Image (tube, rainbow, N blue to C red; front, side, top):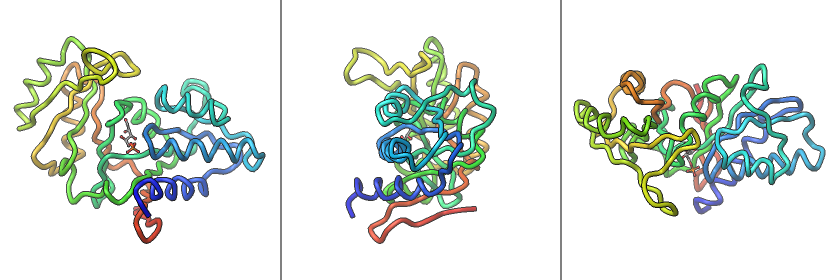
Length: 229
Ligand SMILES: O=C[C@H](O)[C@H](O)[C@H](O)COP(=O)(O)O
């Protein structure tokens, strides 16, 4: 199995948790894109009824509309039964780094509220400690980016303003903010760092998702494996 096949395998496995009349948080990224596509097919074929998706980004919204998943906003639902999303790193305690796609704020808002949060990754995302491979994306109010980047030096982190690829200048998030990618040496206490980063004025949200995942489906060469609490 190559990485793309692993992503498809975990996306299919996640469908087993979706039942009629569920409100489903729809994550962002290439792995969740498969899940949204497969979910739409089940809905269109009539195998799932009265299922609604709450998108975590414009990307998820567009994919859901294209696939035939009825979309509703967070402020239109009483509760989210389950959320399904990818991740950039997963440590052995199921703490995550997310936000490569700059959607971390809406992802955290929705996944924090979900009755169950299912994470979909291929085995390349597994790390011994958070920060091993990836920086922590931090969404910041635009005018504060430089002050926050300097303040992150206190945490021994080096932060870079994320630049856009098909637009001049910085990446602007779905919420109109900038992203700092902060490289930490080694994150010893993810929950503590998550809280501390959010205490910096001007930080909207950060990409550490500590203690929030209920189940991680890992695509491996030998099939889908599960990490759970
Ligand atoms: O902002 C983006 C998200 O946190 C994604 O869920 C994460 O980057 C994983 O994306 P992918 O499944 O494409 O690796």
